[in-house]
Image (tube, rainbow, N blue to C red; front, side, top):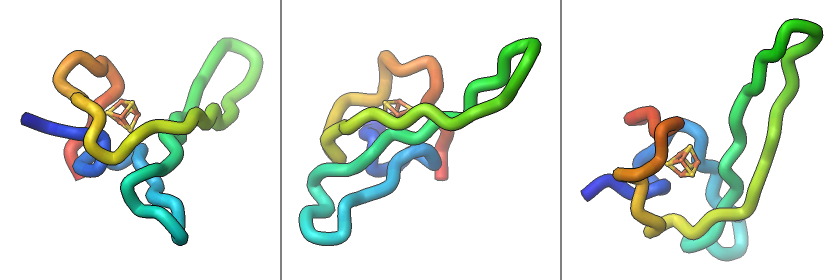
Length: 54
Ligand code: SF4
């Protein structure tokens, strides 16, 4: 089972690698930007449509 820690968008916290940020590039017609949200490294990624294998 894939987890967030195996995803390209996952950036672990330095002091606690079981937690991290999911950082995704969002492109809309006017601009492109990055969106970050806190996630757990072991969170199930199988239902995530943005999962990208490292
Ligand atoms: S929530 Fe989805 S895109 Fe974000 S790190 Fe986890 S698997 Fe990757």
